[in-house]
Length: 154
Length: 482
Image (cartoon, rainbow over all chains, first blue to last red; front, side, top):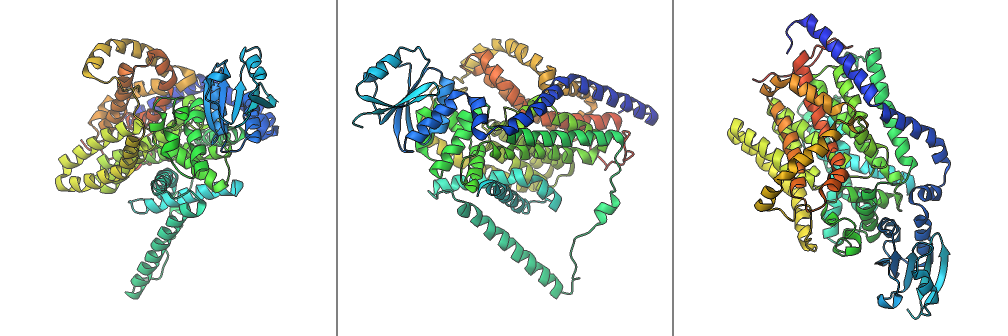
């Protein structure tokens, strides 16, 4: 501990000044981030719940909602996907539906079929042709980057 | 019940926390301050016990025990009041305005500015949190997915936790303790539906707890100005704000930071004053921390061993009388979940699955690389501003603080826990760099408040608590125990 009381006070005053100046200078990017966020707030607050979800999750949110709207909570389905992150987001919304993920599967005949098949694949993916030509599948919804099929006879 | 239900959930958790707090040596204001973190721990544990007993979650079954407990406590208080009156005691209430009269707040301009920053951060955090839905990846695949499933299923189920569809996203995630998912689930139960945007208010309350607890622990031995400066610096650490206001909200690291800080804060007080109540409160927060994240288990073991050893060494039988109930508290919070995990499928590939002496020895060569990656992170302004740099300066400058009772305990808690984190990097079977990149900045959130507590002690020791400020150095005596 510094001994002289006057010296202590002066030293601490300088120390506080240095700390505060250092904090302001080195936390500048953080302040800037908050200011940007504050400027964005009015726009964000004006968005609806679905618009916010869409802005953060992308199309997979709408696709997951389409599945939720077209299936019962106890439904089971195959989920064809390319991007694991999108699958994770879909799983969050689809619970408690029983989902069996299938990565980049082309031949639906190889899959243990359930009541539904949801495909969320890139537009040019070869699976689309196979899915659309598969006589055991009935397409019940298309859009938002994917399609939902009902498996006939299930 | 919608939004009203959410506030009802906050009220229930707070009442539960205050009720449990009344069994410890906490004043009313202290009970209020720690109501949320304690309540979150006990209510989530209550919900887990309900799941074990196959009792489906509903507002009524969650509230009922607390109504009964509060009623019993109120009746006992009334009985004690009339009993005292019958014995000739004065008919008076203990409410007093003395405190307010004696402590008129006269803040300097600098202190006002610091208070403004804290209030600004708190308001910004609240508004930004509730404006946006969840964003963080772990929030999706771990914490909020579980919360959603527990709400829909009406309880915790082995079927969900052991389903590889939900566990493959993050190996080992289903073994994570359940405080956060069950707390969020409680919010949904009271609201009646899933709203992953509004329920983030819970994490805002944790942020307030973090700042409030820090100020509470520092203020007794520090001037108001210094306590506020450090509080503002803690409040604005970018990594803390990431989980308090931005995309990281919903992770369990911020709650764990509150538990770690509260545990070492009461532990420090125990080293200072030797009160059994402080020991037990430290044990309570350590135990709830272990129920929050797996990292809390190592922290619980470390701190409880240090404190128990100190208690028994310095106070013999009194120390044992403090340590035994502390261990009981830990067992109540930790054991049920650890036993439950035994029922779940065993993982063959985890962060510590390759733990062996041979692995440790052969992987020691990783250490230079680990330090090379983590050290620059600690001194990166857009992650921690000057926090760790100030920690280094104050620790070096105030090296004599190590002779103070309790200070070495704070530093030991910080460094031993950090060593555990580094040890996991040494033995991890995952790609080392991505593993560090995706975890280290979250792990440091647990330790930062402890580092700030160390800074406050050093600051006090260096300048003797005579900082310039509105209270003119009127600081409660920091017991020098050499």
